[in-house]
Image 1: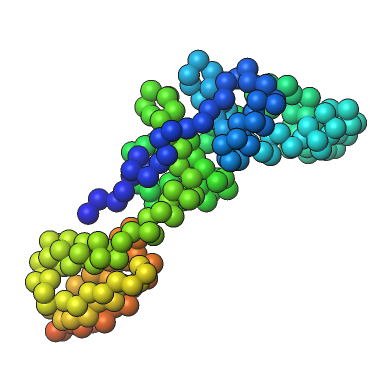
Image 2: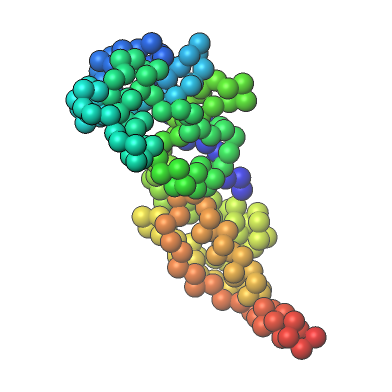
Length: 228
């Protein structure tokens, strides 16, 4: 089973701004579309992002009329002071764009979102063109997967195709993404593999594993490692 990719979940219609877009146009874009950030394009290619946080310094520093931060002020504060005097997207945008490839697995995207501490990643193809945006909300849609669809996948794909077990010999139930499995498998290692395969399926919230093995091959393996 292949993990879903960024391309399968991303939003393809992206609201954008131009490097020459005025400060007021940027505010209107965010407000009219109920979004918190917009990518900035130069010649059709993304060169930066303007978020609500990039526009706030205009008020924080009273349009640049407040005193310039002192010598010992941090770089972030000095950057915000410079943004306060900006009148176009080029002046206030944050660069470079935090981006991701459309071919990456969604688990990788989730880790990159968490590491970057942002709400979204802009999706850029191999030619550098903007092809979509992936937000935290897009990733969470995985957990809206239909319970019956998930149950069928577990029966047919995990047990039938991957473990070569008769799906009718295994009880599978899914309620609100929580999976319960019950039945017998030949070895303990298969029980552990089955749980892993089910747990990593997109849309699975938790797994109640009540599978039982005919014999415990993992104990024998561990004893061999110790005494062999």
